[in-house]
Amino acid sequence: MAQRRQDQLRRFSLQLERALTQAGREAQQRLDEASLKLPRLMTERMRFLALDVRRHEGPLKALNPLAVLDRGYSITSDEDGRILRTVEPLKPGARVKTRLAQGTFESDVRGVTPG
Image (cartoon, rainbow, N blue to C red; front, side):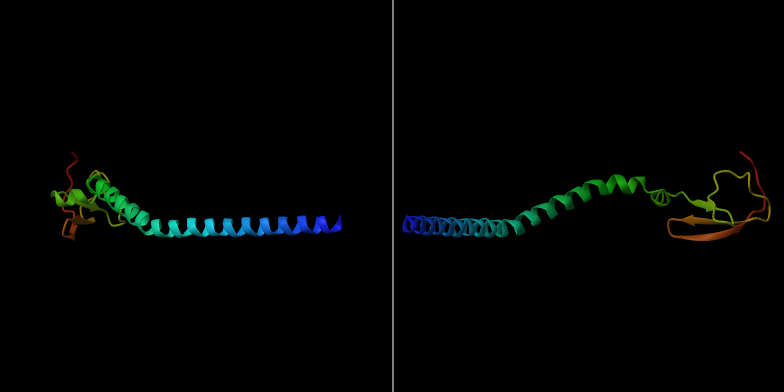
C-alpha cells in the first residue's frame, strides 16, 4: 500500500512538473509574442497621438489671445501690468505699455477721450 502511494505521488509529481513546464513555455511564448507586437503598437499609438495633436493645433492657435496680435491688434497695459479694456483708469501723464506681434513699446498718455 505504501508503495502504491509513493507511485501515485511520483506520477502526480511528474504530471505537475510537466504542467508547470508547459505553462512556463506558454507564458514565455505569450511574452515573446507581446514583445514583438509592442514596438509596432507603440509606433501606431505615437502616430495616432501626433495626428491628434495636429488636429487640435489649428483651433488652439486660433484661441490663443496672442494670435490676434498677428492680425494687427495690440494689447495695452497700465504701469502695474493690468490689461486696459477701457480708458477710465488712465490720466494724462500715465505710462502704458503696448504689445504688438513683433515687440512692445511704452507711451505716455497725453490725453484721454472716453468712448
